[in-house]
Length: 407
Image (cartoon, rainbow, N blue to C red; front, side, top):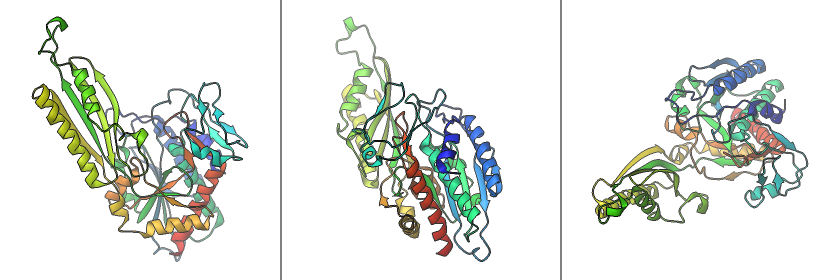
């Protein structure tokens, strides 16, 4: 089966993770529906010891062929959940053959996939492009990775060629950052692993952001406006002041590559009380700590201005840059480069401008770089991928398995 055929089967199963759930894993029952489907498919391919855990992880093993038992055990991982935004009704994937490289209206949604916003579209001219109808996400993050892993496994097993031990895992709740904490690293029993969860085919990633969530709560003093002179502290105005004290150009819109940012996710409240939620990201540890110091300085300054206790800041660290782990096993990157070269796919080293299951797993003892699936526009109605890009990513994955069999 081709990876695109698998992907079309997977994306119609809605699996949004829910960050407001009660802390259980998985956070949505749709993830179990896909997990059981994938487990059945793995069994049909001849994968052994396939199981779905109570927390919705799909695990499977492929023993090494005789004589290759001493080779490194290679893990392949992708996540089943999607973001919850734009996922409240049926997903209708749309194939656009011989895409012309120009702006593309998405069904009758009123939305248009713009080359201005996604410049890589120009390089996809002549390919078959897959999108949603513009009213939902497509779900290629990360069901494209699942489809590519499944197809690579099928090809290796069907060929009968020698290979080392392989470990397969499909995970829940990656999008809300909680799933990996339930991952059975010891039971997975891999020496190294790769997540198939990146963007363009040929992408190799092992550097991600250091990350935290910062929550500002403002406690105002609410009195009648007619008698508010020198008494009222308008919490909404103070919340605006907090944002204005942050560097205006250090936001996601104005940053790229390894550049960090402050991102205001939400602001709610009124003159009496407000809550502002930020995420803060930086690939450099020292710069990351400096960003947190800036937030604390804002809290201190505004409390001096408006009164102690007016502004309360809570900072919660979320994840670290996994580069320090991967640097101790550089062969993981060298082997990935070799695999792409053998598949005829130009490779590039790019930063992960966010987090990944691979980050958490790396710090838990399983080095886990990330590879591109061929997709773009993740987390919204503009998600897209090409048939050809998926084929290239799958071919590189097959070559990666072959590289680990001979190294």
